[in-house]
Every structure is written in structure tokens, then in C-alpha cells.
Image: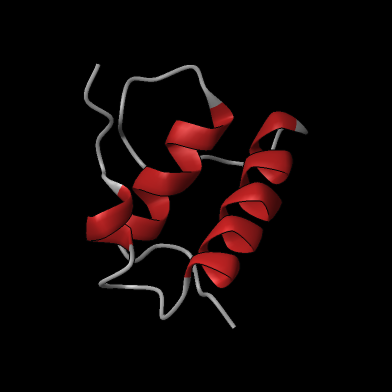
Amino acid sequence: MIVKPSVTDLLKIVDNRFRLVVATAKRARQIAAGSKLLTDVDEKSPVTLATNEIEEGKVTIC
């Protein structure tokens, strides 16, 4: 199974793995709690939705 976007692709956007994991987890929790989706990807998994939002630049990572 190939996961899109890949960690390698996401690390081009986020400067380190720790920050990527924290940002993805935080956004995935928001999505699971009912937050409005910022991507048009047809997916059910909050983690996959969060990674797509990060890749699309729709989530600000501090």
C-alpha cells in the first residue's frame, strides 16, 4: 500500500519529523472532533486528511 502524501514529501514542507507528527496529530484530532475540512480529498481517515491539508499548505505549522 502506498500512502500519499509520503513522509518524504511532507518533510519538504515541515522542517523535522517531530514537528510533522505533532502537527498531523493535532489537526487529525480537530478533524475527528468535527472541524471543517480544508481539503477536497475523498477520504475517511482523519490522519490522511490532515496530511493532505499539510501538503496543500492549508495548515499553518508553528
